[in-house]
Length: 296
Image 1 (tube, helix red, strand yellow):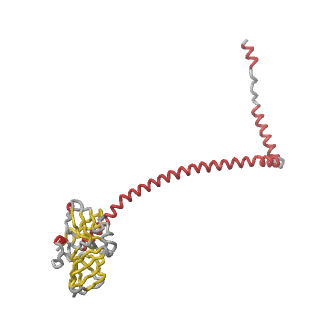
Image 2 (cartoon, helix red, strand yellow):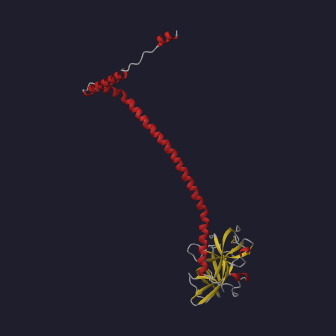
Image 3 (cartoon, helix red, strand yellow):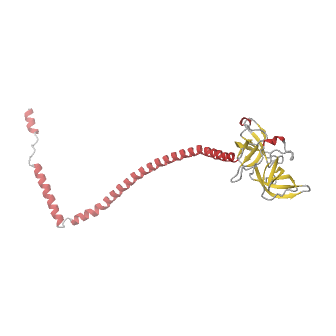
């Protein structure tokens, strides 16, 4: 029974000549198409096919180009985002470094300026930040962030510098605490400092008082009538002198500190007075030096 079924469903055997026949058929067809194309017979058919398929092929080509551009664009956007993030991080780092460096640069500049002053004078200086100006318009004082723990005492001279001006007197220490001090500006009405002017081979002395309401100028009085002062003469501290009646706590002010220049001279009955323009406006300074000691 099984043998009869196998005989009934047995598949026909493969013809060994079939592949060769197919190959010869394809070769013959290819040669025929080549000959027809060389003779121009297939040109109309080819042109027709080109006209029909050209738009579709062009559309496919454009689609491919747009897809490539889109892919590159997506990659460029991602790359630009990464670059932007990197640059932002670098800017933040540099800003942080600059923020750390700026106080050091400023401190270095102040120390170099202090060194130049100490090299050209017999003074020992203490640099001090100005922490506040007086809110009372009736008095001209400022507070510095240095006090008795740093060696500051009442009566010590306080100097400042603006631009190319010489280091000049801007006030005198009036009160001292552990880590702060109050400085009375030389422009305050209550300020009185012994002053002197070098005139030829003589020294002209007087008393310098503040008058900040007149453009922060100073008023020099008790000048001898015979003194030959001129506009532009430099006024300096005279130290403590009994003749001018300066307070004893001013003994810490050394002589020779520049103060300003004479703007005008006027004669009175027995003396002269002079208007003085300070080298440094105490209201404009933000950093000062306190003269802790000076050579006699």
